[in-house]
Structure formats: structure tokens, C-alpha cells
Image: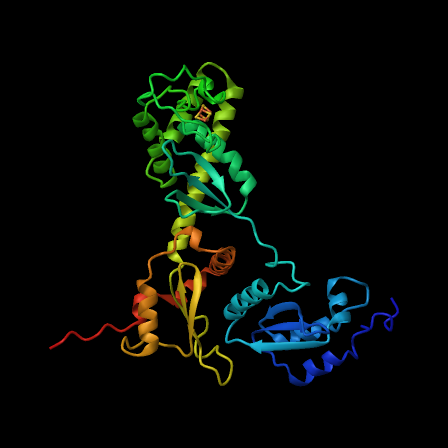
Length: 374
Ligand code: SF4
């Protein structure tokens, strides 16, 4: 190709000169602004100057970045001590400003929870909105559609209903002798996958046991459902029903995965709870002290300047951190989509860089204990 044709049409862009003159190669976030000062795009880089200059080397062949440079009228950047802090700042800015050219993080990601409802005959359902009504929630899961299918299988195996909330319930131990005989509201009672509390086919105690079993499974306290599936699989093989055995094996694998996911997520959430030093004094940019990040249940709650070995509990910063540590864990309905997004972002950061965990220490070590009187 003719080398002249490959020259970027943006090599003389006024914003390029500004970047060349003022930007430094340090971690940070940048924003491109439109004619009315509106934020068009937010990005982050460990080397802000190099990253910004790369935009002006693009060839004029269309594409999102070329279109961005055509409409951008200003560019602003801010430095942050580390890539980690830049990453969190980028996410928060995108979620708050919803820039037109950002696709990642701009859309509300859909999550779903497993919900055991709080009703006379609790149901096992998937929900996108955890509610503060005493229901139990497990999750979230990033693939709501897949979860719905899995829950139907779990409900069938454990024997808990998954019909609409409005379905009338009549336990066999209910005192309503004058009501006519009832027929089950769906085929699950006939198939034996639901004890049929809608048609007086079970008492409240027996149904409650089914709900307890579902809860025990999701809390990792029981594998009865999996053991039962394995036993039925063995029987199917013994009678040479290999197709049936394969179906049971696949169902068992899916439900085992579901249980593992619920437990792993819970454990991971608990583990993202520490003080993190994303850089050492040697790695901090010249003139800047390495920062101390307080991460509580998967959220960056406070960034303290300096290496901060420990805080005085009588000083404002020490008091504030001590207060944070006393906070009870928020129930899922108190966390917005943004919080979950940040939790998954932090989870990805530490999962991809397990060596970073060596830069963490227990939260309690951050606040010095008061000397005991006397
Ligand atoms: S059998 Fe009755 S209680 Fe069970 S899922 Fe169907 S409608 Fe609901």
C-alpha cells in the first residue's frame, strides 16, 4: 500500500498536540468530550500518553474510534496511582456517565438469583430482582436464561413447586372440609415431581421438608439429590436403559455444577475482603506514595494515600475504617447492578493475577487496637 495513504488523517488533530505536550505515561483514566462538553468515551490505561496517542495513528477506514475522533472536541485525563485504581475508576465513570461510545459496562448487565420464596408453600424460582421480603436468595448468576432451566430441574428433583405465586394452595392438614375435591394445577403432581400442595396431596410438614432439602442443597449441606440421581442412573444401566441413564447423568452433572457455582461464589465473595496494596513504594510513580485500598465484600470502599501500615482508631481515618468493618453484610437487594459489576470486576482482577493476593492483608490489621487501660 502507498505509505502516504496509510498516514492517519488525525496526525494534525488539535487534540493530538495537546496530548503530546501534556500527557504523561502513567496509569489513569481519560475522557473524550463532545461539542457540548458531554462525555463521549471513557477509557483507562497504564500508560495514558501512549494510549491516547495511539488513537491519532488510526487510518481513516471508519470504525468506532475514527468516528469518536471526528466528533471529539476535547480530551481530559486524570492519573491514578495504579492500574487497579484506574480500572475501578473507569468502571464507575462509565456507569455514572453512560458515554455514547462505551459499549462495555454501559448496558445494565442482567443477573439472576435463585429465590426460595417466603410463602405458606415456598417456591423455587429465578428472579432478577431480589426482594426484602424474607425470601432466601442465592447468587447472582450472570446467565438468567440458563438458570431458569436449571431451576426447573432442581425443583423437580427436590419436589418443590415452581408454579405462579397466585396458584391457590391447599395442604391436606388444612381445616377446610367443605371445599370440593381439588385437582392439581399442573402435571408435575401426576409425574411425581411435586407433592401437590395445590390439591391437598401433601401436608404442610411434608412440603416443608422438601423446602428444607432445597435449602440444604443450595447451602452445600446436602448432596441427597445428587446421590439419588446416581442411584437411579445405576438402576437404569442395570436394566440396560442407556439413554435414560445418560439423561440422568447429564442432569446430575448440571445440578452438581449449580451447587458448586453457588458455593464457590459465596466463598469468593467472602474472600474479597481485605486491605490491598496495589503497588510497593518502588513501583509507585515518582513523587507519589503507594496507596492502600480497603476492599469490603468485593467493593473498593476507601483508598488511603500512602502505604498505611495501621491507623490510629482515635483519628478520623481510623474511626471511619473501624466503622466500615462493623457494617453488617448488605442483603442482595441492597446491592445495585453497579455493585455487582464492580464485584465481578475485582473478582476477575484477582483471579487473573493470583500473585496480587500476596499484597493483601486482613482488614483488621489496618486499625491499631487501643492499648488496654492500665
Ligand atoms: S402440582 Fe400444584 S403445587 Fe406443584 S407445581 Fe404444579 S401447580 Fe404448583
